[in-house]
Length: 470
Figure (cartoon, rainbow, N blue to C red):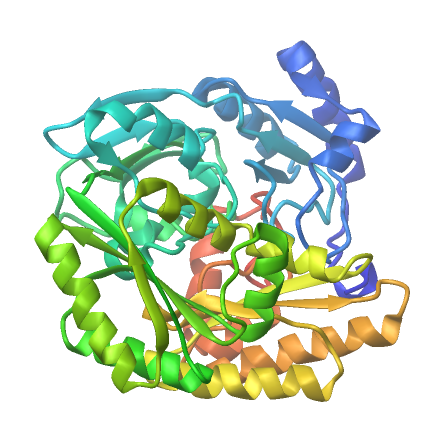
């Protein structure tokens, strides 16, 4: 995707110049305009070209965020919230310039309420930081996207991960938020109770809004007790369809799997080379079971029998923490394994989600499309909820290859929508998938635009993302 393919809103040159002067006065050394920092804050782990902000505010508190947003609102200057910069769809780009609002300095864990199974954190806290802090409490936070993302960014993109089949996504695990709105007001979206029928659910409105409605400054999150026992398992299959059939049968049987991940043969080959795992090179499932020691053993045995009925081979389960950790680290390093398998190539990473009953068909058709276009594109996914990822590798010096990769992504999104799925299960819309919003949502997209215009009439919050405003 070239810059010419992206919407470039009109820059407010005079407003930006004035806001920069005012921000310098208010923030001093917390406000930077150097080229290197601006480039860093337009960096995304994606093929989408960088579009730099005009300056970066390093917020240390909710008051900093409120002041920065209020100044930008006064001069109608874009505000782009920035966490750890792991966006895959151009979410941190600044197409109209403006101010990147870096929230990494807001990294305090405010309090843990163990009896209520919740925690209050600032948006710059990362998932790994939180779980390290919780290590001795007997509690953990389960949402685990591949990157060590910030929790604010995870909420903003409605992230999920390998545990989603058991614990849900960020949508189900955010209890309440504090946020600075486009006019500088601070709101709290809900109380700490686990349920409420009082009014509109503003928490879920902001979760997944990708910074287009406000800036998250505090999160109250659900926690879970660390299970008494965990076991991990691997099983190879002759084809993707057999692996998907085993998954469907296991879920219909009521086996409470915590994780169930699909790898195609190309992914397995890349992971073996990168992480020295030694898996059989064929489609496979990686699984994890949580519960009591007896329950975990029973779950593994039940799945083993189902896998056998579906043509699975080499079913193996382990309970040692170091063996489980090695397996899941290899899975989380899959993107880098795929990059290593195609040295010198760029990678276009995308995802879709379909009903589980259509997953095998969608994956198989996508594999055929990739092969027909002569591309290297390993596939892996969270098979328990129908979500899968493709990393399409191409030579950046060959425009024709890049175009083929983009065309495969286009057809994949349309394929998923035709199967009553979504164009993105967890990566988000950003810039890269805006064109699919109306196809997916129809007239509901107009309601989303009306909400955006009502909350952010000057369109300063992360403009040209998620929705195409008329």
